[in-house]
Length: 248
Image (cartoon, rainbow, N blue to C red):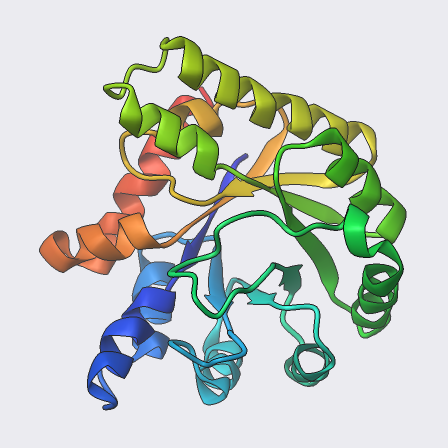
């Protein structure tokens, strides 16, 4: 059964805009769980632009579902992850000037370094995930590095969907969806878990959710945006309903 991990970073983004104490991302994690989230995702960035160290610790202490910590492959972040012990540690690229993560991790280009990072996180008891573009070379490198999970970056699919009238049968959309599906098959064949995420929303999620052997979707911005109007519990329920409907 496909699962939904809810990224609550942008609740912290609103808080940090005023440098105050509300809205509290810990309360957002509670609401997401009450709405049916199977996991909570937070990205502790090196520049601490939204989620803070104490947020992760407090969420870990109350989380009744899986906690996924997105992180750069730095010694500082590895140390924090080993201390906090999330269920899943997902390695992502970071750029100080980017608004959000703009592409997948180049596992093939830094294989030796990532082998060491994966080993340290795995030895500390975490499942380790790579956020990668849907490319065969990156899947192969992730398997060689020892990752247990690959989350396929769905940004190109989402942009094609939006840019072509939300037509799922448009050639550009079919092409991008096919890339995700092919990468997913390679991931499963290599013995890793197939997850996906990035720029997924209420109108484009179902074709991704219906892919064979997909295990989890990690979605944040769309859910937090919808929650502004209908509340976080209901926003999570609606997304999960769409995902489950696509799998039937």
